[in-house]
Image (cartoon, rainbow, N blue to C red; front, side, top):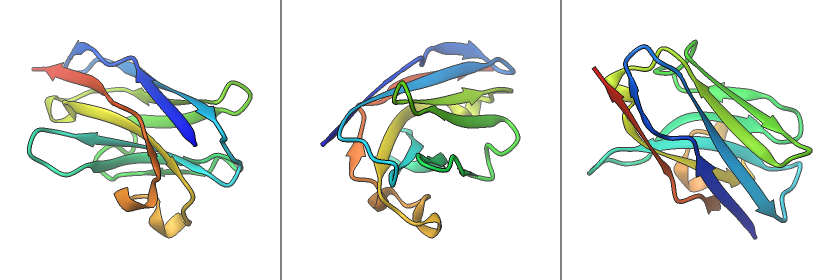
Length: 125
C-alpha cells in the first residue's frame, strides 16, 4: 500500500506560479511511476505530468509542456509539480497518483493504483 498526500494548492492570479507537493509513504518502489492528474467538476481526470521513480524520466501533457515541471526527491519520497505561467484553464483539483506502468501507459488514469485526495488550484483572470 502507498499513501499519497498533496499540498500547495491555492488561489493565484493568471501568470503566477505554484508548486504542488505530494508526500508518499508506505511501500514505494523504484518500479513505480508518479503522476499528476487534474479534474474539474463533471469531467474525467486529465493527465498532467508523470515521472518514473527510478530513472526520473518525465512525461507531460501538451497543454502544460514548457510551463510545468515534475520532479521527485527519492530520499524524502516526495513528488513536486512546479507550475509557471498559470492560466485560468489550469483551475482544477490536482491529484497525485502512483503505480506500475510502461512509458506508453503513463497518461492513462487506470494505470495508477494509488491516489491522493487532491489539492485545489484556482487561477483567477
